[in-house]
Length: 330
Image (cartoon, rainbow, N blue to C red):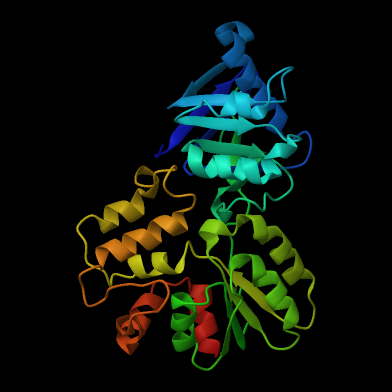
């Protein structure tokens, strides 16, 4: 399953309109923000169609799991589904289990999980964590119009950050690159995204720029940002590009006829049953595109081609201005 799926869910008084474009989407928010209302409208439409009083238009098949049914487990209900966007209401604690995580990885379906707690068994993107808001753009409608708002889209915030220390999630190619780029900083590896916060906590002095793969950092972002905000006497900024491989692909160093198309319409190329995160997809794409070239890419040891000064600068040219400011402040 791949691609984007547009949904429009409507009653006489309420409209929800949104798009799902990755295999894992998280829907957060306090009580009375519309999460339960949305899922119940979709569930009733699946059950009785127009007789429910609701209408649902969708680009593909969908299913809504509200709660366990008598005599049927979640496995009985969900395992047979194929090429389906599966919505799961909160308070279904099986979503935090290793068995469910394995099902998500292997099923090839898309999942929309309503939960206020991070699902640390799954590698989901920081860009697919949303809350439901009432849109002011549609204030003239008779119905109340709701849409999804991305929660973590305004990072990094690096004002006055000197980047004395750069902490990378990666311990291999990405770490080697950032060591070369931030030559006047102390560059450290956290040894994986789940270790980022522990590594930052160990550093008591110096401004910190933490770099993590945003494509799989969703479960860690809340704890990480909460800590950086409450820390006093030390500037800590978190930058979460899709992945290090993504930075290389969009830098212009790699020549490919279809690369621009892939980067612009990525959901159309990422098969959910093959890639649990876009980080995996971009890594394989970069390896395949450079397999027989002088710039052959390896995730374990960075090709010297990418450490040449002009190529380091070429990759850095596509960084957000906030990160470039950190480079200038070194």
